[in-house]
Length: 370
Image (cartoon, rainbow, N blue to C red):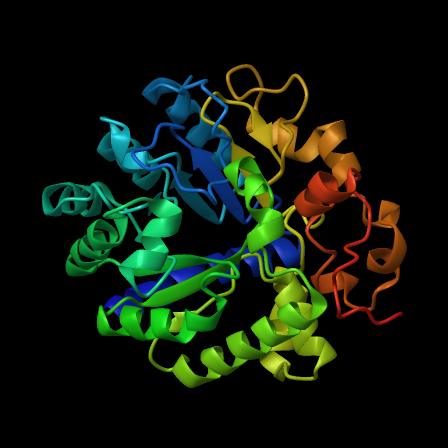
């Protein structure tokens, strides 16, 4: 039953993508709504800046206004994120609102403070699925990134989430520290009856900027070995646990470059496309109401806030967003690559590392000239 529920969630999101591809829908496929920056952990790979002491948060009325505006625009998938969303005392009310507007809604939590009572209340409120984070198969490596004792608490949180009967997706931020134990993580999740695993590539934003150069899998030989490993894991476990690469555009290029993509998967690449910014796929709302083109982007849109602006107008007519989406402005290999339709590189990483939103991703080993 849980797997059927997860399949229904995926179907709804893919159907929205198809409608977007043929012009019926115009809104973003995925919206991240950061409802707080407060957190009970201090993870070294967090995309939120540790120097940001601004804890200004949208209140419940402002969140309802955001959800109404998104509803008019059309949105395929909503992720309530933080910080730690469970630190909001009105989290169940927020989930109830998302359910009222008909959203497919995920809650992104570290799981360490999730209780049976809260999990059941969230399910009753209309939550679609849980997103939890686990970065290793053992306590020592996980706790090195997220704090002493966090592995045990997160594993307990995963078990509580699974027990609700709602689908559970676990994300893993891939680093040099855990890249060789990814299969062990998947085996652990399978044992815990988790339905989906979603590995994430480290992006140098927020606190993660401090560890990026030492921990990111970014050298050509590392990238090739990692993607080979992910492909093996994907095929080995595909009938036991769903595996979906988070922000998968570079992985798409890998599959096409190595002729490993099936016909149906190539069709999906044309629907899903690549970078969420270039393809109008994503939008991210900070807890103070400012807006970013994606969760990892280091800069918010200038002089725009959901408290004063309509999200539909922002997404469709904002000049700054239109400029950032301009594929023709891409430079170097990214512009000339055969896989631009399903990749385009990570524009957030391009800006942070290269100082230019449109610069090529020099570390990409999958360039094929058109």
